Length: 195
Image (cartoon, rainbow, N blue to C red):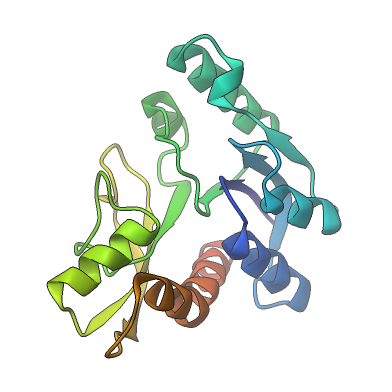
């Protein structure tokens, strides 16, 4: 049984896709052991509570400096004893010592086809704004292992999504979530759990 810890910053639509995947058997051999958020009052915490999953907030605002926050974050992660850590819209730089400790055990979802529109500064709507500004006809999502670079770790899975004439960044974001992210992340977890 793969012990999965999900880390979130916002509403948690990818978290919900994982919860639903475990519940309906799309993701097998997997136990969701916890959810960590870096923000208080986000809807992902409600999603975890509704699913009976333990959730904890570790906010940088509660610590004097980044180093203290990083230590607290790693201690909290360790307390869940995860086999796999899933970054599902977690907008915090992962401390290097956490990447060292959980090498090849942290995955992330990114809303583009890496290596396009990724790296420092590319998150949320900024990714889709850049894709539309460039005039690409296809975008999508990527699940990859986390290394010490930003969106540079080995790719696990990708799914392409068409860009339509007249798309706004919000339109494209929604279509990529529905057609790629919410399917890809559960599929990647299932693949890891059963390999």
